[in-house]
Image (cartoon, rainbow, N blue to C red; front, side, top):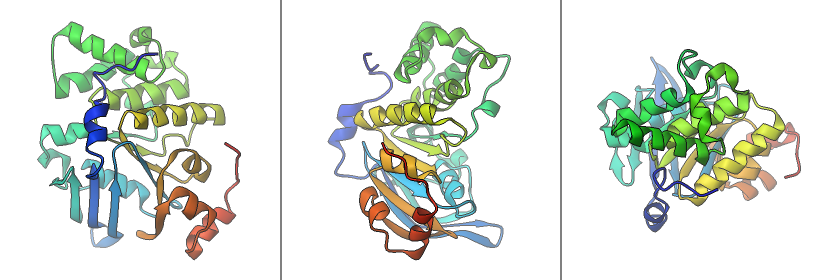
Length: 269
């Protein structure tokens, strides 16, 4: 299937790989007076996947929400291609909001049951770029085809889709239709069976080949090994270990990482 050029601009992204797409420096986040993230420092390059792993309550989802501006109470710096962004999405400009897209864990609550799939995806196009109806519809069809779904799915309603199709339609296709630079995926495979997880991983790999940077938040270390280039391990809001995925997972040095690995079922690729 031919990749639709209106979704991604791989040549431009790959040409800029020397500079990180996303830089996180000294990020500390709070809920009231409670500090939940402590001095986070990470980078994401174009065409690469950074996995954020840790147990429930480690701060993974808070970090992902900070990146897209949904959690406002944080200090430090987040930079997109060298330019600092505001903590709140409402204070970021339209282009900054477009460049970082969030894929939520639960696709079921993200769809209006009375709207077609195409109408739900079109909302993002109309918000960021507008255009005539035929142009919007063309982008919707291209987004569906990019996530390996027939374009006629645009006419279906949410109750006509499987869980895996909802995740691809609602979460990934709706994010891609904005032509982002960074896709933040928060536990996107957690509610899917193994075969559907594998399909999602293959899709994300192909998007990385086009130059997309991915932040993949998960507790599923088997998926991390098959997808990510680098991994950061969070424990109680602190990065206790970070590095290339193979090195961290095969030769962990932190006691917490060793604990995670010891309690993970290994699966062959």
